[in-house]
Length: 553
Image (cartoon, rainbow, N blue to C red):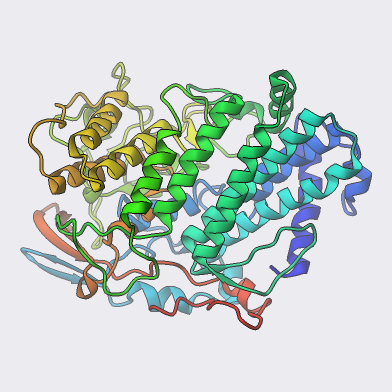
């Protein structure tokens, strides 16, 4: 990342920390903030760390029809997975997920502007300024987050801290650096490793190397947490680092060090899945993709996923979540998440629930009746839909609610959940030949969310049928959590049908409401994104760098 951009991000964090956090900093002249003048004691470090992490990492740069990382990059994840669609022009949300070709009984629907050349044509600095460069936002957020934590670590030696307080700050910074590198390595073909305050690099590394750096920092966070002796000191520091609005809800709060370690184990398992492919196309567990930027999952990889997830998030754990508070929130109730941007009558919402998403639910699933209405037909040539997401659901006891636009009404998962971890255990077991054990975890997640459907374990399902249950449940139960794109990519669906990809047997609704089942979609999407021009042009690759434009497409 170029040095001038890094300096800007750090300066922004100092100002934000003084205005957005509970413990106020004496900022002085807001047009000329300095770290030494504002972050010179533990209270200052606490305020800076909270503001820099949450505002620079997840808010700045994401103002559009929504207002956070969790509405825009997470929105792209749901769009690319065909869970939702949109027709607003902002940030190209209406075209980023349009497939090359849909083939249905009544005809075909071809896209005159296929995704890959279209998105590349907009990967310029000028188009970033105009709000049209899809590649830009996740890169901006995650390197801002990484820069924030580098700054935290650089300031710690100049501040007097008790040993356990210092360890908690370090674990925090290491964790979020791991998170930032994970999201860069999972999304982009190549990235940069920058691990010092005010540092820079023009040595681009392929995405697997960025994932490896994420794993390094996740493991460093685990080992640092293991040095903490006082749970009281640890909790006191985390209470200042996690915003008050993020310490509420059914799953939010202050995780114990053991719970935090379990979250990291879940994310280590996730890193394996998001950096590789495990094709499952048209019911074929042995499907292959002829052209991919990722290696294929091996038995050893699945065993590693199983081991990490076994030590991962448990039901009832406190995890990292967030809610939209009523005063000075980190994100708004109506525009800060994919869920809120999808909640309401489909004629009025930014994101529209897809017919493909809805067919992932099983017959009689109580989550359908509790959350979705078919009162309004929304017509669009690419994604006509019957479905709308009901605000807060109907309130059926024990049944999951998928969306809310009320203050405090929606609990956002930021970094792992019980359902994600359980479904990784399910998939690893199915892939390793333990079909009924895997289906048991699928059943457990459905029970947890109140689906009310019959169990699938020990009912004679084949491995392929079990994987169909698994893929359906991951898309259904993890909606809005930023994972759907990585899932469909590793299953092979977004690749061209000519290269072994595609999605088969899906529902397609035409303008006017004619439903065609058994349709085939040839998405032909770019699997790992190019580096945004704002980085590659201003910070050209040095000698020995990996490609900044995905060479496989």
